[in-house]
Length: 504
Image (cartoon, rainbow, N blue to C red; front, side, top):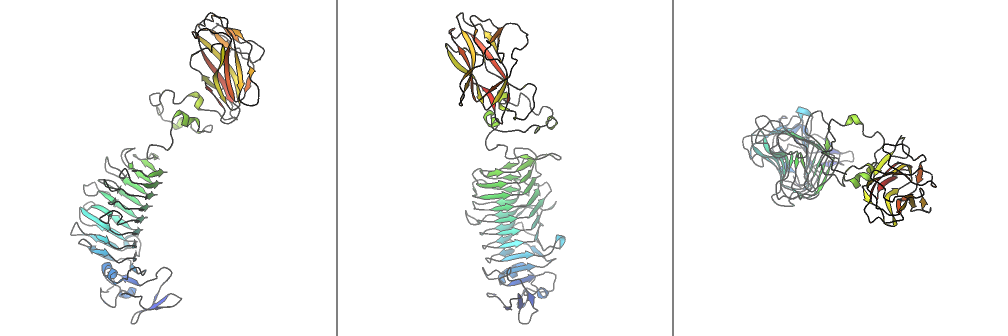
């Protein structure tokens, strides 16, 4: 049948000589429409197929009546059944046709594969769409259920089933026999199930060749898969692959939900994946990944996958990240969820966690600078200030005796803004200051730095200091030859978002 049969009115009316009229929506069905029903008493012969009451018996015969790229549609009526017993038992080999299964649930058109493991539905022409069909594996180790060998194939709203006695090796195989021979396949809102543990079921969807722009979207894939729910064999490098909004579970121990060749490119977005070991459930190749979660146990929330994040969680990365007050509650962390054995030394230093300007605190943030020598007849920064802060206390402890030399010493606030540098105290003499000497300021600029060896002792600083961005410097008038050592600590509260003090 090479041309559209029957005349059409603007009211989408079709009349074939000798047949009943059929109402069509030609905005959707631009070509011929053929009806197929194994239960309607029709025949695969001339005079059948143009109306539901005289339907054809088989899909393959209907395909043979279609004209390429005319927009012909084949409607499989509710309850229609077919059995495929050989390779290419149903061959979709006319370009541009659409096959639509009508009905819901158990009343959907059903294609069952039996007799030969090589039994298949083949897609051998471009621009074909299939929707609304139930495909059932009826022979164990069936090689492929639907074999895709042409560009721009779409399958939508279909279901594929294995059983306890019959599992296919692959439910859909995107292949074509060579690279770029089956590009732009779309598998959308389909269901693939093969629950029984067996050696036969390898994958629901096999991406078997190096094809481009395949879209797998919104599917449910659940089975005991020997390879993966979605699998891509070695050396078959797909490009621009898109995996979106799929739920994929592999019930087999030690295997993936999705497994791709390392060089495959594309995107994986918002997939929900289930298996037996976190970190091995998803192998994304070289896909960009966003919003994917994996879980390996019931009654547990999924965790992001892949486990490597864009960016980092290094100290510098954490320093630029903001956590609002109460964002992490203590009860949210299980026993030993965070221990010193799991976090590298210095990875989470105190200065990495700045408080917001509006938070209340009775003490503040304490930053301690490593023990260091004094500047020699000079001033040198001991702390760097970013943003406006309130300094509540500065304390120095002598850990190695200061050399015997006149050495008038003070602390200086060195602003990087418009303000001038300001002495935070008057000088104190550090000549031969002993180990465990404590150095403090009072908070009143004209008062000398306090030196004492009384430990324990009351803290001296009575007044808080507002310090702008810049540095806090240690200024020494003398040189002790670099023998003395002091460890400095500062306690502060940020006065604006992002403000902090770090050791210089």
